[in-house]
Image (spheres, helix red, strand yellow):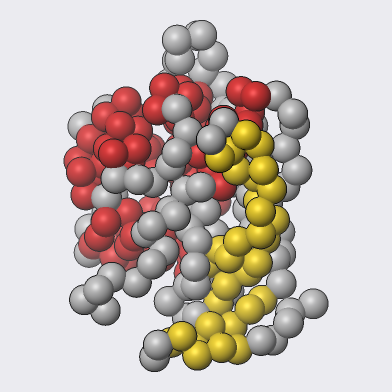
Amino acid sequence: MSTNAVAAVGQRAIESVAPQRTPVPVSDLRAAISRAYTRVTGQAPPANVLQSLSAQATLETGGGSAMYNFNFGGVKGASPHGQSASCLTHEVVNGKDTTVRQNFRAYASLDEGAEDYVRVMVQKFGGALACAAAGNLDGFAHALKAAGYYTASETDYASALKACSGEPTAQGNSALLPVPSWPVTFPSSIDVARLADALSASALKIAEPSSSG
């Protein structure tokens, strides 16, 4: 049940909504990203960009099964329409597993969530998209890490992206990686915990409004 709490933050009203699981097939994630990219940029997404963004959304949402409130990238804060869902999420801080409650952007539809995700990537992570356009998932992961998108091991994140894209990893696994995402309960495995850190801590900075408004 929604708290229906509305608070004024600057000039934007923030509406707290209940966390709601919105599972979708990976094929629907990919199609929504393609439509959103066209709306945001005015052109169809290059094949490599679509593949990279689809892999990231797959990773961030546990293969689409752990998507909440149509949030594609674990983006924190409030959506452009002011909706935010408070979720328990797993993070690793100073090497220690911890569970905290944080606010994540919430959306009314799959296309709304996809468009905000693509816009954030285009506006704030151009360097990562340039690597994606070149088909360089290692560079994509590196650029995201450098820009503060995630806090996990860069090697782990890149390997997970490759697995989600179907690209062979160092371990030779090209299957989709069923990595759980926020705000579900994670296994105790330290390897999964490190990847969970990448997911739950994603977009820690990019959810903040820019100083230019």
